[in-house]
Structures are given as C-alpha cells and as structure tokens.
Image 1 (cartoon, one colour):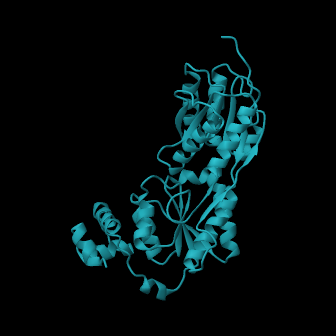
Image 2 (tube, one colour):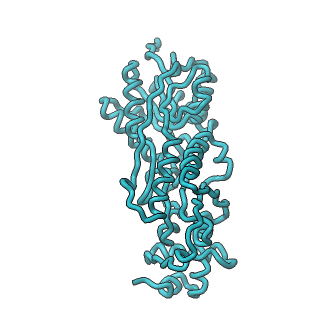
Length: 334
C-alpha cells in the first residue's frame, strides 16, 4: 500500500509538506504543489478521510469553473447552474462557487478538504484536467459536466449531430461543414467524431477543409465561417457546435453578401433564448442543460451519502428545433 512517505520521497519533499498540500494548508509554492499532486497521481495514493468524516457533512456542494468568471455570464452555464441550484435546494443543500486560483486543482482540493464542501461539480472538463486528477487522487466525491472521469452527465452529441445532418440532407445539402468547439475541451472530440459518423451514415464525404476548430466565442465562429466560405468546394450548409459560434457564423455569411437559409444553411447547438429572435431565426439542437444540472446534483449527492446510484453516466437527449436559418439547397450557376 502506498503511504504518505512514498509520496514525499517521490516528490522530493517532506511528509509534512505532502500533508499540507493534501489538506490545503500552509503557503506551499505552486511548483511544489504541482510535484506533490503529480506524485499522488503517479503512485495512485488514496489518503484516508476518517478525520473529515468525524466532522460531519457541510451540506454544501462545490462548483469549479475552469475558465474565468465570465463563464458565469454564458447562458449555457446559467441553465446548468439553475438546474443545480434547484436540485440542491430541494435536497436542503447549498452551492459554493470555488474561487479560481492560479492552481485550480489545488483550489478544488483545498476547499473540499477544509470541510467547506462535501463534493465538487466540475464544469468544462478539459483534456488532462488537473482538477479531475487531483480530486480522484484525494478521494473526493465529484461529478463532471461532460463525458470524462468516472461519474458524469452530458447531452447526447451523437444523437444531436445525427439529427442535424439528417435534417440538412433532407433539404438537399451534401457539402456540410462543421465549426467545432475549442479543441482544449473534451467535448470538441465528441462533436467532430459524431459529425464524421453522421456524414458517413448518410454516404457523404467530409468536404476538404470542412471541419474547423471554432473556439468558444462569436468572433471565433465568424472567423471559422469566413474560412469555410473561402474553400474551393462550395459549402452549402454548416453546423456550429454552439449557438454562440452560430451567431458569429451568421455575421460572416452576411458580410460575404450571402443570405442565411437561402445561400448557406446554418445550424447551432443550444437553443439559447436569442436564437428564436435572430434574423433569420436559428435552427438549432436544444440541449437539456437544466436537466443536466439537476442530474449532476443527484449523482454527486449519491456519492456523498454512499448511496448506490442507478447510473454513474447519464446521457440526455437533445431536440431538433427547426427555424428559418436552414432551407432547401439552391443551385447556383458556376
């Protein structure tokens, strides 16, 4: 069995330093904390939490957001948080936003080990997310909003992409492009892989250069759409991996002197409130984000209370919302 002494030797620090890092105590340099957490993960050290158990529960669940606090202004995050808040309230629980620090992984563990929260919900998990590694190593209950880790909840990207491609094919489109999310996000892979599979299932080839990493903001969608419009092969329809990316893409289509829904069909993923009021209104895949928040709290609470959840992975279905931004493919003279 791996001991705290093994971790200390591996990291080149004292056992007291390891203890401080694991418990979020003391003023330990960030580099030293990083080495300790790497050693904890490498050696798969699982500390005991008897002392914390004796203190009892805080009846508070933590929420960790990887990006800056401007993420809270994002309507997609707000919907998930609303579901979490309602579900927590119904269970007599509170939510605590974990302060963002230079070392998010250490911050998550510090708050949890201090007894302020009983478990943590991770927003926007990224590839090789240090927060997740640290929580696993410290044996702290957690759930991810996104398909990563042992316990997670997400929306069915594959189903949504299949329905999106089918909708566009029904309208006569064959050259369909994709504006994917930021490649740092785990979800980016799901969107690209699901798009590829959906295109293959319809017997369609992916246009050369037709898949672009769009990022996270409207400006990213605008830039990606401009690139798609500049391809040698004419793209007649585009699926954006978020409504926000689609908003920017719509601007690029207009700037090119084209008409959305006639010259280029455009779809989003989210169905945010503004989508129905754009000109033209945006066809999109409505994501069950509120329900994802509710489900995340249920999964996390089951871990905290040592209940046996019916599932540890929840995939919720999206819904196709058809509006005027998609239309029949129009043949143009060469």
